[in-house]
Amino acid sequence: MATSTIPLPANPLPDNAPPVLVIPAQAHEQHDTHDPGKPDSARQLVFGLLFGVVFGFLLQKSGVAQYEVLMGQLFLTDFTVIKVMLTAITVGMLGIFSLRALGLVELHVKPTRYAANIAGGLLFGVGLALLGYCPGTGVAALGQGNYDAIAGILGLMAGSYFYAETSGYLGSTIQKIGNRGGIMLPDLLGMRLAVFLAVFVPLLVLGLFVMAQLAP
Amino acid sequence: MQAESGAWSPYLVGTLIGLLSMATFYFSNKPLSVSTAYARLAGLVGNLFSRGHTENLKFYQETKPKIEWGVMLVFGMLLGAFIAAITGGEITAAWVPELWEQRFGPDVALRLGIAFVGGAIMAYGARLAGGCTSGHGISGALQLSVSSWIALACFFAAGVATAHLLYRL
Image 1 (tube, rainbow over the protein chains, first blue to last red):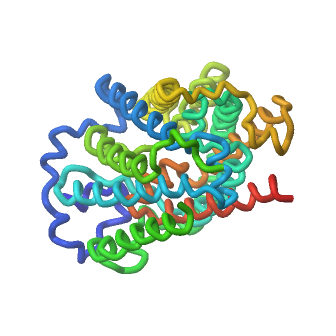
Image 2 (spheres, each protein chain N blue to C red):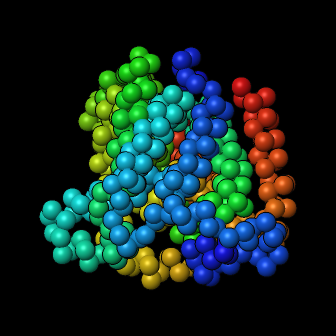
């Protein structure tokens, strides 16, 4: 059951996945409201709004929605952004894989397309440095009164629409280069998921401790 | 350039965002992700001008322009940041960030122009890469997605290089 919950059939779990991962996801199915063909229920729209309120509140409180803090990360003088992200990744990783082992959630691994991930990632970084807010902190920046974020948000919408204009062409060209489906880091290394996590999570924690020492 | 003294610890906020991720997976079966909402909103605007053209675009056949969970998330973020700022006495009410003004002057039009261009390039890159700092950088990375770790490395590499070109030349 856990195997079939990965959205891309091209990416089955490794054959040697630990047995704990094949617990049937009954508990999850009882409250699963996800159906891509139907509009989100009113309940889910309210959940989205509430989760957004929490996310925006946290981004503002951490300071990462300030232009100076994000640019400080890019100048490598202020490590607040990476500290927030790495901590969220570590806690979320432990949490999501634990919930999944209990059959309570399913993964949503994004497809790997090497050329598009690299080209898009580099373009994103250029835009990020020009704007000084990311798509998430931009809306939080507007919420705390940084009105220049309005121009950034309009730019985000314009850039998205321009992407849509070119999406047919991109789909038949760059997105086909290095298309590997929803692969995960342990697949790449030929490691079992549990073994990979047992190595990787302590490495992330170590990285956070080193960063706390070098850039308090 | 450190976060202001009133800011919460980045480790506390990171932990809470990690827990929030667990909640969105459990209650909504969705990862935290932001940038697609801008694309959906842009599609809704496109529908106002030329519905047929917008609906024919490959991207909008796969990602319907509509108000859904992710768009509500972004509306909520605006509200949440406002609540945090007003209760913490941190409303900035500024058109030009201080650091920008020190480097490029107080011209509002210049700042808004570059912000618009930056936002457009960033959105194009996010759609090509398949996500932004939230969708790839946090949600994808915590699921060990290969694409997300590649994208995250590229976000920072190009961001660091561009920021140094802008401010250090």
